[in-house]
Image (cartoon, rainbow, N blue to C red):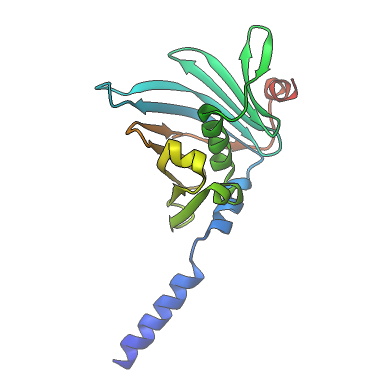
Length: 197
């Protein structure tokens, strides 16, 4: 019995020593200077039998922002930075109005992909499970605005964010998958240009 208690104590201490917390997740997500890759977004609407699917690519730069480049079913580019959200049209990047549901969702994606848990904690209760290779983060809204939009958000990943599921109050949901993200040390010239405009 004493050996069993000692073994359990050692196991418990080992588990505590290897616990994966929000600070470690933030550090892991903030490590790469640039993360880029494809995304697949499925919008599940109660009124439709099949999801609306869109695809594109993204570029997340630690000090610049997020480029969200939608390719199908239509082409539309978005840029999210500290200055706000802009959409590209034929004349260039145009800033979008602040404080609407779409802008809140885009800011949320930016915070999630950056691993900015301190920004997320302002508006959500965070529950993290798993380890650095396989983790899941559940976000439950605190702020009144986000409670009107989302019931919960589930984010999962490993080295990078791999899946985001947003459950909305009216019963719709969005699933975003980023299956093949890679990191880089710097932006390309075209990416620098997009962030500089």
